[in-house]
Length: 336
Ligand code: 3JN
Image (cartoon, rainbow, N blue to C red):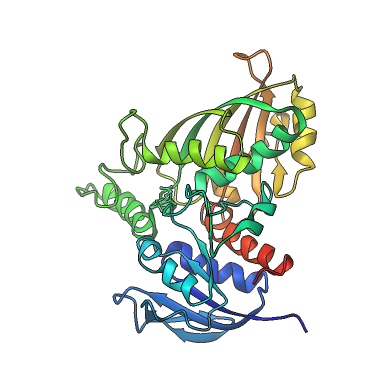
């Protein structure tokens, strides 16, 4: 029988509950499961494979006997990830706390699977917008090289958590009844609006979300010379992030060649038939694990350029699925 592992999950919000779904669907070899969260959620019950599990409060001692700990609890990573490692767990962390630490591999299995082998206890899961972009860039990077990338995002409210999803739904209901809305999860009303501001502003005029896309991508491609510029925008979509990406390639690539390369790449579904009105959209991509790519065309502003539209479920491939895939890599490589 396949070896099974003692698993802990820290955080039971939008990402944490999706990790449970994905662990169950993909039949991750779970021997035991420990659910950890803040005192606010402690005592609540959550179902996994038809069984009830009670959430316990995260403490530094909670990881004894744990083989692999998935962290999806935001602030919990900085507080408890190192304690988990000390007690022998391998940590797969969804937060940005360790992503740029040179000792911590940052991994998307379709892009740099081998990097997990260098881990010293913690493996970081990239930002959701970064993950879907690098899955789409990787096959083109390998085929012809990439000089620069310009990306604009259309990010669903799911990226800001369950409360933000509830807030968009509530604002739509309130506005339909001519009621006033008071924004909480975002600085402005998000219903019927766009907000070109995700995470905090940095000194260079970019937001931290934009700089995550820049720095995490360079790290995973092991290419500091890769030029990337991003504009990240929150849109009133419940789930799944979209990205308009323009790439300047080192060698010329036709749209048809790009379509073929992307179509043969792991984790990608090409949906690209304008004559039949086929292109990826967030409404139809939600709850799926692949990265959907369409609108593939030769760019008009670069001599060697490809533009495309890339959509993926931020809670699945952008967070939970990628984290569980990292867990599967550890199992495959015998690193757990
Ligand atoms: O807003 C989004 O669409 C993505 C949000 C990601 C996020 C939210 C809060 C904290 C992150 C992240 O994954 O980069 C973090 C963080 O850990 O910094």
